[in-house]
Image (cartoon, rainbow, N blue to C red; front, side, top):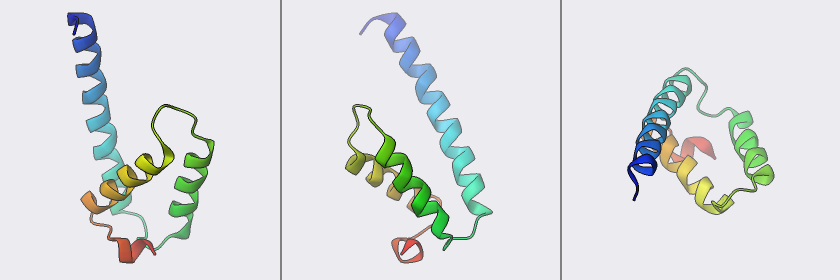
Length: 76
């Protein structure tokens, strides 16, 4: 790995962590059973055309919800 690539990844990883923290803070003030959340994520994944599969990204969002204290039962 080149130093430039390593530096880019370090900056991206730092930005990702900051965004995840902000997402968790926002979720803490939102209604757990808000159906708009699931609809919003579903819409995002339908439009996604990047290299990560929608199924994998759905799993990532589920893990993020669990990390924020939102359980599968609360999302259903």
